[in-house]
Image (cartoon, rainbow, N blue to C red; front, side):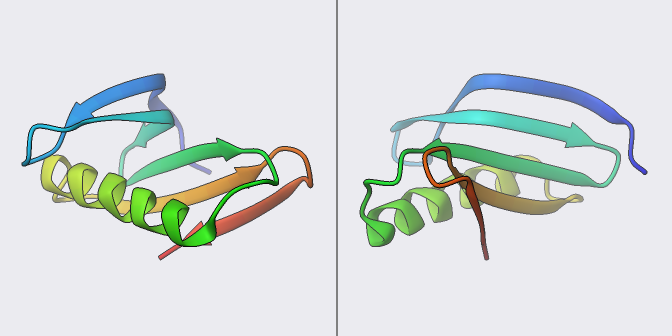
Length: 84
């Protein structure tokens, strides 16, 4: 069981190229950062994977000492996919 230190909705970050990234939900705990992105069932999986890899990269640069997890939640099909 992990107690959350913080939960952020629509959290914005800037990547190394100056692009703004908006993460739907970000949870920060003692050892783990979880990125959660909500989608409908109509989306391009390659584009989503690219987007999530960008999120992971930016968060990893900020929270270098924590484990980063990333999940995409398909709200129409009630499906959760973990992105590695």
